[in-house]
Amino acid sequence: MPQLQVGIFGASGKVGGLLAKEIHKHPHLALSSVFLRQNLSLQLAQILPQETFVTNDVEQFTAHCQFVIDFSSPKALDMLLQALLKNPLPLVCGTTGLQEQWQTLAELSQKVPVLYASNMSLGVAVLNEVVGAVAKNLAHADIEITEIHHRYKKDAPSGTALTLGQTCAHARGVDFKEVCQEHREDSRKEGEIGFASLRAGDVVGRHTVGFYLDGEYLELSHTATDRTIFAKGALEAAKWLSAQKPGLYNIQDIYRS
Image 1 (cartoon, one colour):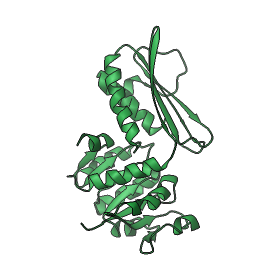
Image 2 (tube, one colour; image 1 turned 90 degrees about the horizontal axis):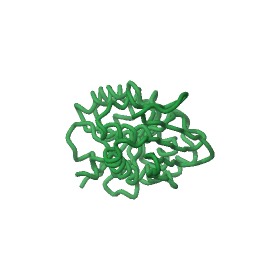
Image 3 (cartoon, rainbow, N blue to C red; image 1 turned 30 degrees about the vertical axis):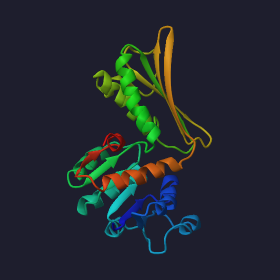
Image 4 (tube, rainbow, N blue to C red; image 1 turned 30 degrees about the horizontal axis):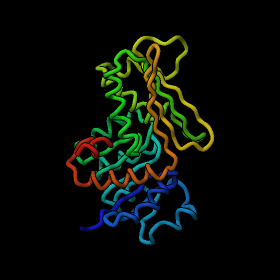
């Protein structure tokens, strides 16, 4: 089987660097290109294969790979998506804090397979399945979602927390936008899904979905202790997505197939 030529967009980031380090463990994947908005660091240079094409030109980046894995920022993703609409390539995207990018992702997915996940870990994929079932069965429970990440994370609530909230809302048959309460300034309203975010230290990530009833409550938590799980999950997603038809997929699709 020929190797899939993978390009990493955002290789200078925390997960991007781990992707470059982990990819050699997958014999069917090869790191063919990386996109950097800044100079190549010595640390990254030491782990890149000698033949890897390094560039800050997004169109040259896409021209030197067959498949893209993105862990960047919403603004950088805009630039990547415009290039991919011109030169469509399958995409695994793990960038969080998206807004108008959803429409462009959907447009790209009509041409090539696209997988978006706010969190690439297996544990979160399972948690997302479980909270939907609990939200439906504990239909009258108040739902509160708390998350904590390292001090440098920019978006809040995290993309993972919002995904968990969307799953709970969908399971209850309600519009997430109508029940989402990201910043509470008054008493809790019936049926809303509340969020609380903490940013401190070097915490990789912890998410807790709580279902609170009178006299009892149930809390389900996932804690990431090593950021490498996100890189490993993205590479497994890339291998799976490379065999799929055009469409917009999520991390749950991998484990349901």
